[in-house]
Each structure stands twice: as structure tokens, then as C-alpha cells.
Length: 252
Image (cartoon, rainbow, N blue to C red; front, side):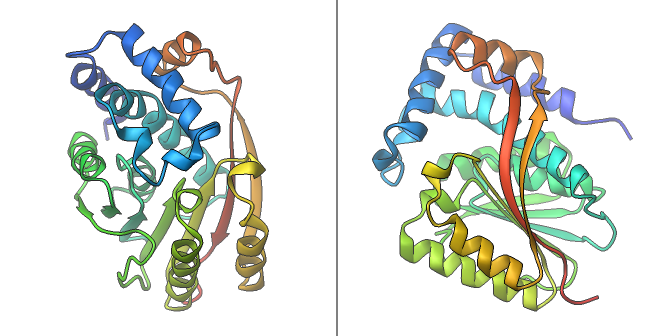
């Protein structure tokens, strides 16, 4: 099969650089990065995606970064593609983490949910560009209320840190319940402890259920456009990092 990723990256350039220059996107990326790191109070109010520049920066930089990180994690965890027929992406953003698992599983069906209407539209565009049978819908992510049983892989990537305490508690309960009914579970979060003071509680819950917790550092494998944007924005990551919680299917 032809790898759909290069064509998707080219389409991202055409889509998000039609009305903005790379320099404008890089400036927006600096502001977006600051929002995630230093101005986290704005996240719940939609601050990271409150302008066209920030939306373009997220789509052009963070979306491919999340795709690369998720793909590398699945490979290092040696997650078997066998038996995965459906991927459920909770807090899907532009859809790239769920798409990475769907492609890893041999073009599994992917379903995404996110509270942001722009992200939902972008996720549906991402699925089409990558040739996946995918659909994202707008819905609160703290209480997804979606069935996930055998044959389903559930991913929650970079979303739990954006929820309030009640939303995180509900999400964790949903993930653990989905595991008990046969789903595989993967949680991906930034490695910085300041963004996830609740991590130890989640780690205990997942490892007590038979799962594993890991921290990852990969050599930076960002495509050329993303490397250029990172350098222009003063980010220039030399490695890609993440922390994960993983639960294999409880039932055969």
C-alpha cells in the first residue's frame, strides 16, 4: 500500500498556508505554545484555538507531532494490530492520534469525539486525507458515554490534562470500564509533571488493573515543514517526549 502520510502533510501545507505565511504561523505557534505551558487557565475557555493563526499552527505543527509520537509509541510498545477493528479517539483534536492507531491496525475504522467544532471538522478532513473510514462528532469528552468492547482500541491523547477534576474522574472511570469489557486503552500525555499533577493517581489505577506506565524520549523525527516551524518559533525539539498508560484487552 502507498503510504498516505506524505500526501496528507502536503495537503496540510496547502490547506493552512493558503491565507497565512509560514512566518505568521510561526508567530502563532509561539503564542500557542505559551498558552499550553504558561497560560493554562485559558485552555478550558478555548484559548489555544481562538484565532485562525493558532488553529493553523496547531494543525501544521502539533497535529503531525502527535501523529509521530503516537506511531512511535505503538511501535515501541509492540502493540499488536491483530484484532483491532475500531479505534475510539476521545478528545480527538484534529484526529491524528486516533488515525495513527487506525493505520497501525491496518486501516481500522476510527471514531473521534471532541468538544471543539473546528477540531471536529479538521479531524474529519484528516480521516479523508489518510484514506480512513472515520467520523468525528462534537461531544463533551469527560463523559464520552460510548460503548467500547472487544475489537476496540480507545485512545485519549493530550486531553486529560485539559479537563477539570470531575471530567478527569469520569474519563478515567470510562477508560477502566471499557477495559473490563474488552477494549485496549492508551493514554498519552506530555512528560512535564506540571501539566498532570493527577498522573500518579491514574498510574496507580491503571497498573492496579494490569496495565503499564512508561515515559518515552524519541529522537526528533518531525517532517521538514514541522522542523522549520519549530525552529522559527524558538522550539526546535531535539527529541519527542511523552508519558503513557496502556492496558491490553482484558478479554480475548
